[in-house]
Length: 470
Image (cartoon, rainbow, N blue to C red; front, side):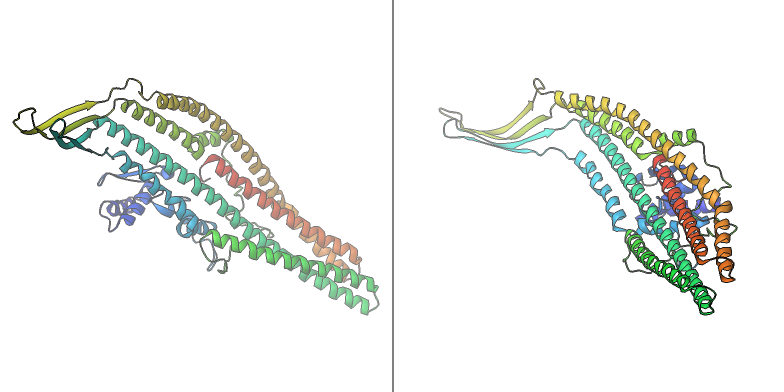
């Protein structure tokens, strides 16, 4: 760990490019402090601040080395899909580039008022001619408070970017889940089509032998036709979900895509990215709510908006005194009535007094906004607490449901369907019972996949509500 940190520190201090410096700084910060993924990073060597949007793709979500090689060759894991989205998707690039717009507040804060040209020609009546300039002198504290306000605006824009990337992450998770479940459903229906075909062959064989009526053949053929129609629809759904995920990843919609399969129908269920780990208990609800109040970007945005508003209010106070105008130039006077003609210079100072306009409207607006934002911060925490509590209960319910299916329901349903099919093949039951058992088995598997969908959607909602990767 220390060796890796030292190497990253060298890349930060002696970068070959700004991009290398940014990535090395982000990687070092994540290595030293995993909770710093949503903060800004400062490099002391250059005093340049690196914001999350500058660091590009690897922050949301951070790469988890333990899951990078779980998928087999050619498969796209969930983490890989997320990282490709943040690295290649034009949606992520568009969001990140909003930081450049926010950074324009810095040169705006450093912009000084323009000087004015003074031309006065009263030579015929007064025999006076003046040519000079009026130079506004801005008080230094105004520039200071404008810079403070601009930096707060940039931080607020950075949090907005993080929130948009966080929402994009949830969309990718949901799209990835849809691909996995669509493929699982297609695989299940392919098995159903194969089993109904075997049942049809068995019915035809028994009908030819005179063991059963031709009605059994028609029933089996109907079940097989229904399975084929449903299989075709499931395959279309697979193509649809893959195209959506490809586009979210920033790739062409027709790119070949393979995702890891769920192992739901095995006696010993393996651990995957989409199934809960029952060996690891969920954090308590109170812990998640406390974390959400600290990490949730919606709460942090309101808090940052308070800081930005306070900075704007201070900048308004600083600008109450208008700028001083320093006038200087050349003056020519004929000195009537007899002369002589004089050449010289004029120097003057003009100072506007804040008698009627002392920024009272801006001060009132910022004070009222500040009061509203402080109440909004509490309201946002209340909303976050509600969202976390609801998502937490949904995750708990879905975990229990999945565990029940994995413990015995899947295995029992598969066994009943297998025995019913075998019983018909040896003539111990009618075909109606065999088809009913097959349909019940498919219904159980479909309900299991729906339970996985509900769990993942609830888990994604919980991560969104907490504002942190769980």
